[in-house]
Image 1 (cartoon, rainbow, N blue to C red):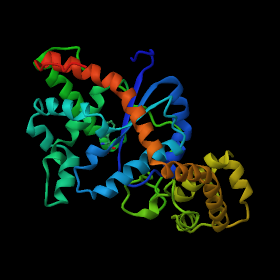
Image 2 (tube, helix red, strand yellow; image 1 turned 180 degrees about the horizontal axis):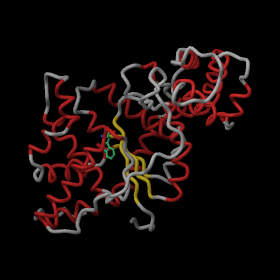
Image 3 (cartoon, protein in one colour; image 1 turned 120 degrees about the vertical axis):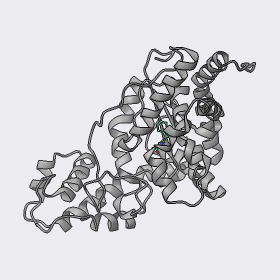
Length: 336
Ligand code: TRP
């Protein structure tokens, strides 16, 4: 619970890929409501991004771009706390303390580490301790809820274990384990070429998602080539016609029309018509977001001001937690 009496939500996102149409739909469904009812903290996990080799200029540009994309989607920097992880040194500080409590064996069992390290020759220690930094991100804000994807479940479990190891050494009641996930509310948007999996910004096949900053031409191309079945009648059948059902869901959310009505509109028409109209709708919907984004990216100074605002808001909780941890672990808290 925070000063305002509101529950604290925390979520981070690594800087890979651009935000997608799925994020757009999630944002309009969830963020606007969440920012009223919760004390929301969102951050850009640029320190986590360093666990794979990054070109320095590209990394910095991506951070600006990502930050601007969140704002362009309508996340209000005054109602939420939006910040860049590396601008909050408390994350790395707490991560170190937690690293000293975490057995190597547990980190060795992380499936994401196993997968990532199998694909690279240079396995750096950051890739190994990645989940500890993630636990620090969460525990630093004494968060109540952490919305994460299914692929992060094991990392969340490790976070819970870390709280227990911490309690075993220093006593109970210091670090709060976030105990709730936010359920998937609203529409679930699937990959365009493979409607059995979620649309993801880090998909290696770029035809699987529409990014919120894709050009109109690209959007048309991606939607036209979206996988559908060989039937021709436009009906909503998520099991047998999953690809088409996904397109209808997107159409329904963006066009604010029921799926049944859309199906009626396309009676006697081909999938191609629907795809062309949907592409237009997506282009139109994203137009103001893209204009917003372009404006924001023109003024990096302003973006840096907003990053500083986010960091100063984030510091309220982060510095409190870190001070408490310094005290109970025997470190001498620095004077502020
Ligand atoms: N590991 C998360 C991902 O890849 C990103 C992340 C880093 C995160 N720190 C976090 C998510 C803390 C939630 C809370 O998606």
